Structure formats: C-alpha cells, structure tokens
Length: 488
Ligand SMILES: Nc1ncnc2c1ncn2[C@@H]1O[C@H](COP(=O)(O)OP(=O)(O)OP(=O)(O)O)[C@@H](O)[C@H]1O
Image (cartoon, rainbow, N blue to C red; front, side, top):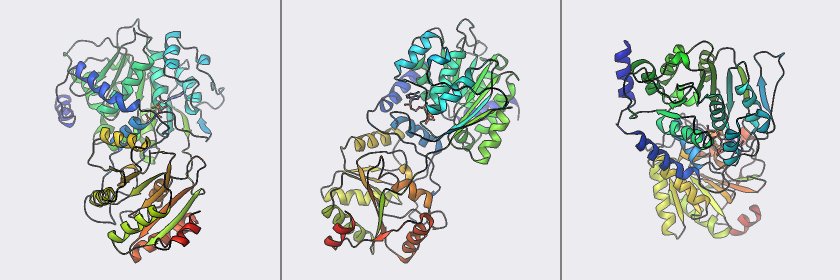
C-alpha cells in the first residue's frame, strides 16, 4: 500500500472529527473529573476470559480492553497495593543494578522534583524503584516493563520523558504512543501535571481531529498520540522528524496489539526511528503475543516484571442456594437480606436484561440499587462506581463488565445470580475468583452466595469446588435458623 493510501486508511480508521487543541483540552478537563474522585479504591479491571456464552440471551456485555483500561484509570485513586517482589532481568547481568528508594536519588531537575511531590508522590512505587534509574541511565537503556494497571508505569515514563526532554531544543525528542484517544489524553494529563513547574517543556497531542498545518515542524519536545495520527504526523505531514526522536514510549502494548491495525502502525513508526533511540515498552499483561511484539519493538531490553498479587478465597465463606427460576432466585436474595446485616453487596448477572430485571425488582422492594452494565459510557460507569463506593447505594447489580476494579471495603456479600461460565458453558474459575475476590478484602470476612438453578449449574459449582479445593456449602435461605448458624 502506498504511503498516501495507507494514511487515508488510517484516517478512516481513526474516524476523524475536526476539533481544536482547545477542544482537546476541554476533553482532558472532562476526563479529569473522575480521576480526582476520593476514597480507597485500589483496583484494576482486567479482561474476563468469559465473553458471554452459557447463559444465552444475546445481550451479554463484551469487554473492550481499551475501555477497561480507561475505566481503571478513571476510578483509581492511588497506587495499587502489591507486596510481590519485582523481577529484573538485565541485558548485561554483570552491570550493577540500581534501585532507588527516594526521588532525590534520581537527581532530577528541581522543577520536575517539585512537580512529582506536588502530585503527592512521596517515594517511588515498587516498579518505579527499578524502572526509573534504568530509564534515566546514561548511556540510554531499553526497557520492557510489565506490571498490573495502577502500579505506577504511566507516572514512571512521564517522569522519564520530562527529565529527558531538553527545552532548549525546539523539536520533538520524546514520542509516546497509546492505543486510544482517551488513553492518550490521560497520559498527557499526567505529563502536564507533573511538568507543571517545567513550563519550557511543551507537549503536543497527536490525536484525531488535532489538525496541523502540513510542513511545519513541531517545536514541542514531547508528543503523545495514537499510532495512526502519529504516523501521519511523521510521514504524511512531516511535523515530526522521527530520526530526531531520542526516547520512544509504547504504552499498553497488550491493548495496542488487540486493536485492529495498531500493531502494524506501531511497527511502522518504530522502523523510522534512529537505532540509538531509547525504546520503552509497557504492558499490564504479558501473553506470548505481547512478548513477541515487545521483542520486535525493543531490541536488547532490560526487563522488569511485577507479578500480580494472588487473589485468595481464604477469608471468604462460600455458599450455594438451590433455586428454580429467576423469581425463586430473587426470593432467596430477599431472604438473605431479611436475615443478614449486609453492608454492601455486589450481584453478578449474565446478561443486561437480567441485570435490569433484577435491579427493577430490588428497587421495588425498597433497596437502594445501582446498575452497572455495558451500554453505559466509561464515564457513566465510573460515576456509578463512585456513588456505590461512597455508600449512596447499598447494592450494585452488574454484568461481566466490572468484576475487577471495585475495591469497596464495605462489600460483605457477593452474589452470583448467574454463575460465571466460559464459551463452552464450563465453570469460568478465573472470573469466579475475580468476582468473589471483591469481598473479604483487607482482612475482613466476606460471603459469596451462588444461585444454582439447574443440574448444569450444580455441575459448575462442583467444578469450582474442585478447582479451588474449597468447600461451597448448601444454604437453605428459607431456614432462618440454619442460615444464622452457617453465616456467623
Ligand atoms: N510514586 C507514587 N506515589 C504515589 N502515587 C503514585 C506514584 N506513582 C503513581 N502514583 C499514582 O498511582 C496511580 C496509578 O499510577 P499510574 O497511572 O502511573 O499506574 P499505571 O501502572 O500506569 O496504571 P495504568 O496503566 O492503569 O494507568 C495514579 O493515581 C498515580 O497518580
């Protein structure tokens, strides 16, 4: 494909809607709101393996990786706690391994250090302890870093770019690509905040709609954008001279390669860069496909990995209730509420329709219920989660879109109104763990109740029991005495 027709295809793919830099700033402001939410969330939303199936109905919520990533960012308030050790694989194992416990040790420009502290960061996060010295090292070192969302990757490479950019040079030196418009804006927002006291370092957004005059050369030292527009700016409009880029950051590699066309575009951008350009790649997950892609983009890398903290069922009492149909499940749920003191509960349904039905019925019974489902925009979802977290609603009914990400300390009960199944109708153990991992956190005790409405769902419970080697006890919700003795 010729350069021109290729660029046209990119235009189509990115669905250009003209908007000015001002409008982009407005959009940044709009996105800014939910990020500032207060509270104690420490979460991360990851794709569930189960993408519908098993329950039928055709209105299961599909998971969009980029949307989930954005939701994670919007609802997060602080670093995700992780007690795991960081694994570091150095390109040259004989060279000393530097790690820092303070930001001072990095010898940053004072204005940048001020920006870091101004964001409320007291010390580097676990991944930052090792990643920052590597990213700032001279001679430059390439890095592949993997750690779950919320562990401080964005802050780390934002700091690296701000430190790397030389304000005396009026050309683009740091280039960062991100899978979507919204995610790019989120990164830009971090750079702007952190670089608040470095007014000479300028940032440009290479995102759809940010139209630039052909032929001019950008003076901004940092460019953050999506692959299609960045490629346009490098090849079609020649606003950026790729050979002058000395730091290249590819964020959310896992989301990037899951997005149609982005993998190739990223590689095409990468090919135009100088061999000496420092390459940094970040990802929340690391399947083989991500790994193969990372190796293509980052030659001779140092590798840093922070394993995800294992979820555990140890503090959770698990039950199942035999029911016939949805009305019966609803009665069981009401009985549970009648006999237990439940701070907050999350209830998982398989389809949007079921979630809506249940929400309506619970509301009719006088419960304060919030509904979270896939037809909502990411911002609407973030707002619902925020209200629930603040205790405005006591029950959250949800489909598969949000089994992770919501760490609400008060959630004492998780109900699987529909059991999690994979495409083949078998138990989806991973999703089960994510769902009921919402409760029993921070050393508190939690309860999980599974509604069993057929022989098939009983089989699923048995599979889950075997998989985790944890007992799931039968609960008769019509027998108050038994319930009280079991759930005490
Ligand atoms: N050293 C630090 N001290 C305190 N808070 C930090 C630190 N580094 C980052 N944070 C905050 O922790 C949260 C997560 O950081 P960040 O967004 O950098 O993580 P991430 O790994 O890039 O996750 P994601 O890819 O989902 O954005 C943000 O609210 C950020 O402001």
